[in-house]
Length: 432
Image 1 (cartoon, rainbow, N blue to C red):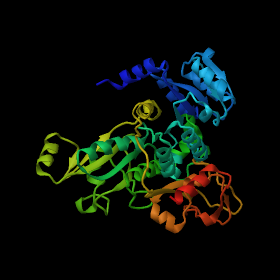
Image 2 (cartoon, rainbow, N blue to C red):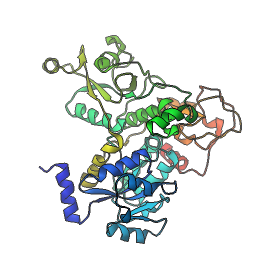
Image 3 (cartoon, one colour):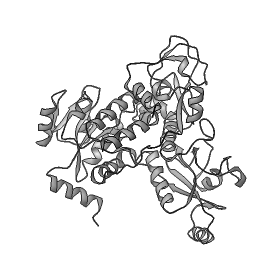
Image 4 (cartoon, rainbow, N blue to C red):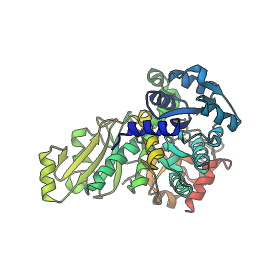
């Protein structure tokens, strides 16, 4: 059997070109993805869209792509296809150009902006492109719709294996195929939790980390963790027991003691099907807690010294490489038509918008990692019953009823931006 690298080499040899990848979002994650592919056989990023002037060209330069290959192009897909066929690379501010390029095999969404992700993913799927979505904020809001649409159109829609939801799913699949009972899944939170984090508060740290202050604020205020837990929860049917999850402080060696039922010394009321997160030494890893009642298997797990406690064991992966791993799900999509992580069942979890401070009538809700709201995971049934506002629909909404700090926003508290693609797609999802 050929290795994945050998299969990519064979693809390029038989097709006369590598897998042609389009990328939307040339920030930290997108630029790293281009850089990684430049070291690989069988795939290359050949079209990059970013709203900031010159950012796409700069991303190619940072990834050590020959400047003579890079051509700026805002429209004219036919010319773009000719440039790609001749070995060129396209840089654009117009993300709508990429689905029009017939030569692209797959499009990667890496903006982190829910509205942009919704439009890009939908148009790419309808154009017959495979989609690898690094924009988990979009997936947490309309992932079920996008997954079903891709199935109908005969293409792959998938989150990446490099982010925590995808890394958890790989551990889950490993345990699931072996027949273990899966108690809970989760991740470590990378930053101390501060629900009041704003870009201004994070500016100095962000500069030191070479990050966007807004992105860092979305990590610190917990929103990123919540949408990641929502994405994996919906894909495998696992729910949070409490709003926001428990998020206990925990080290790796104690995972199988903590993320188990209360009757066995842990934190959960239920014995199966919970998603949560840990604060402390678990980050940046992910975990799956398993159990079994088969005596021989129990004896073997103990003999093999798997990290365990009682009749529970922790499968733990200590890293996730985010953008740098994303070429693997790209290859899986193109070569095998296989998704790493996709929601094909009705969602069971929701990330709802919570007021970061007192919000007054007339104020506009800004984006994730901003000054007005943060996200909290909640059971989808409760979110629906209470008419809580999904975090992905919050940006651009106008406050029409005051909301106190720490309280969930409801649909009745806001006037939504009716022009947004993600809103229309979410309404379609809600009818599915």
